Image 1 (cartoon, helix red, strand yellow):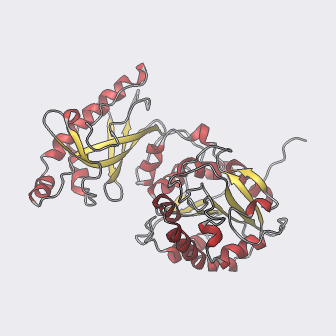
Image 2 (cartoon, rainbow, N blue to C red):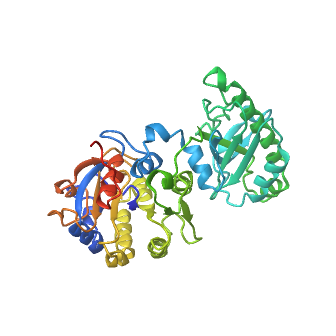
Image 3 (cartoon, rainbow, N blue to C red):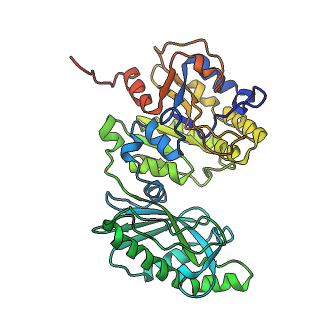
Amino acid sequence: MIVIDGVSDRPINGKTPLSSANKEVLDELAKRGINGIMDTIAPGIRPGSDTSHLALLGYDPYKYYTGRGPLEAAGAGIDVKPGDVAFRVNFGTVKGEGSVFDKVVVDRRAGRISDTEELVKAINENVKLEVEFILKRGSGHRGALVFRGENLSDKITDTDPKKIGEKVKRCVPLDKEAEFTAKIVNEFMEKAHEILENHPFNIERERRGELKANVLLLRGAGKVPHVPSFKDRYGMKLAVVAGTTLIKGVGRILGGDVIEHERITGGKDTDLNLKVKLALEALNSHDFVLLHIKATDEYGHDGDFEGKTKFIEKIDRALKPVLDLDFSNVCLILCGDHSTPVTIKEHTADPVPITIVYEGVRVDDVEEFNELTAYKGGLCRIRGMDVMNIVLDLIDKAKKFGA
């Protein structure tokens, strides 16, 4: 399964980046397969990359999605367990007097700090709470935080105000059962801030005229759900090749193997050729391989039509080895996870193109992989939750419904 993040768009003067790009490989796959358009969640529902990937892998996001925190935590390498409460974390900068909740956020990324290892270590070693916690750094200013213990709830508010110039928010319980968790979060916020404010690393940053990373801003709380593994659900061993923490987290939550490399960044500088190589190699040891490519989504958020078009062409060149697969033995799914139109600069619910290539599919007349022609294909219009059912039937792993 090759998922090109945010690749789908809305037309400008009748053209989209996908329809404008010179993409011989993607178009050849469309010619060899059966095509359609897909509502990853449902018509009119704007998908996140997290909820859309759960749906594409056959996990109902309305049942299994509890928030982005658990996926980010798993993606960061924390061995999350059912019942853990997890957050996304930003290292930020606050100024003012009094407690952390009296101080104003002046930068939500602490000057885009990247070397946070010493700070994470200090918090993990010196903060003591009534429950266990695990803090782990992510890429750049990001991190992930997990609380583990009895009577924890995810029915709480964020501490990140999400805007500069506003005070750090106190965590508030949304129901009575969450009062203990909110108390623990607020205690953690105060103790972590005290350590960060006075840490030699931050004192040195301030001396150099750089912003202190003196606060942890928490958001996206979610309780880690009980999720059946991909292996248990489908009898197949899953591998994920991705650079983004979020998609790696999806893979780990489902019990899959995440294949990582320092040149796979999840950004515009990622090594696409290496990504494709590792994904193809993974087919030798795994039954199902998810290859995720992120940067098309970034160009959509940037409103960069030309940049998105050129990156699609770069993806196309990198995917050339895929044409040599034995499609009597390998089933290929090629799709987007959501639309990120350059005119909107945000995810939209516009359906995305999908192509399935496998021996025995009813090849249709579609000759280009894009959102403007895919609807003419034999798959017609499907949902993301339909994909695994269709694939299991094609590869003869489906179970009969009824007598």
